[in-house]
Image 1: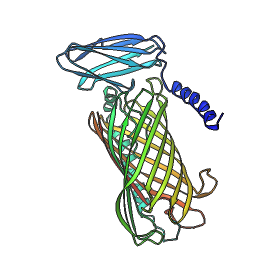
Image 2: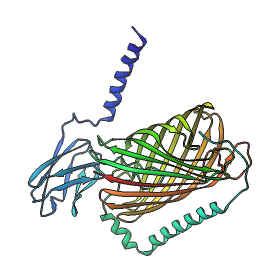
Image 3: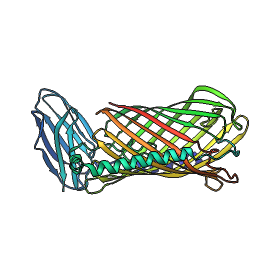
Image 4: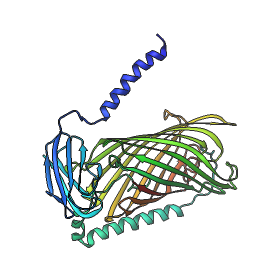
Length: 115
Length: 309
C-alpha cells in the first residue's frame, strides 16, 4: 500500500468529518412556520418556533409585487414573487428573538420568537 | 518581505495628529450619546446591521446571509517610511458568497501599485501590476442572538503574491493569514466593540535574496457607534509584532497603530467602508529609533466599496 493511498484514506474521512461538523443538523425534523404578506405587512407580525429545531418558514406573498424576505440574525434572504409562496430553511435556533423584514419595504417588519 | 533598518530623526507630529483625531471622535461620540436619550431608544427600531465591515481594518464577525453574493473593490494604501517617499497600494477585486448559514467564502485577484523614491533600502520604482490572488473561508463559531451579544468567526486566508507588498519587486510570496474575528453588541443596534487576533506566517522567494520566512502576530480592538441607520463611525487600535520566523521565535519589532473608521450604507445592497491608521508607537530590535518603519509604515488607509446581489 503506497503512502499516497494511506494519506488519502486518512484525509478523506477527516475532510468528511469536518464538512459534517460545519453543516447544520438538517436531518432533524423541522418546525413549520407560516407567514403571510399582504398590503405591505407580515401577518402575523410575530411567530414562534421551538428551540434547537430547524425551522422552515413558508412565506406566502399575496401582494401584486415581489418581496425580499430577509433577516440579519437568521442569516437568510429570499425573494418571493408576487402571488406566490417562498420557503426559507433556517438552522436549529437558540432561544431569542429573530427579526425579519421585507428588504424592498422598510415598513414591513416581523419577528420569529424561539422559546 | 520587509526592508532593512536604518536610523532617522524622531517625529511625534503624526502621533499627536492621530491622538487628537481619536479624542475628537470619542468626545463627539460621548456628546452625541448625552445629547438626546430618546434618539438612542429609537435605534431599537432600526434593522440589525451586518458587522463584518463596520470596524475599519478590524474585521467583524459577520458572514452575510445564506445565498447572498457580493462584489467588492477593497484598496489598502501604505504610506511613509524612514526616508525618501513611499506609497504602495494593494487592491482586492473580490467575490464573496455565503453558501450556508455558518460559512462564507471569498476569492479574488490582487492589483498593486508602488511609488518609491529616494529611499536608502528600497529601489526607486513607479509601477502598477497584477499582484496575485487570494481566497478566504470564514466559519461562524459563536452566533449572536438577542440573549447573547457576542459573535465569533474564525477565518483563514491563503494568498499568493507575485509582487512584494513592501518593495514592489517580483517575488513568489505565500501567506497564510489566520484570524479570529469577534464582536460584541454593547448597545442594541447602536454601539459595537470588535476584537481581532491575527497570525500571519509567510514565505517569500526572490531572485536575489533566496528564501525568507517571517510572521506577523497581533491583535486589534475597535469601537463603532451607529449614528444613523446607515452611518457608523469609530476608532480602532492595532498592535502588531513581526518575526523573522513563522514559529514566532525571532522577534524583530512591533508597532501600535490607531485611527478612525467610517461605514456608510448607500442602499440596502451597496456600502462603503473607510479607515485610516497611523503608527503611534513602534520599536525595532537593535535600532533605537522612534517607530518601526522597517516592518510597518507610518500610515495606512483603507477604502472599500461593495455591491451585494
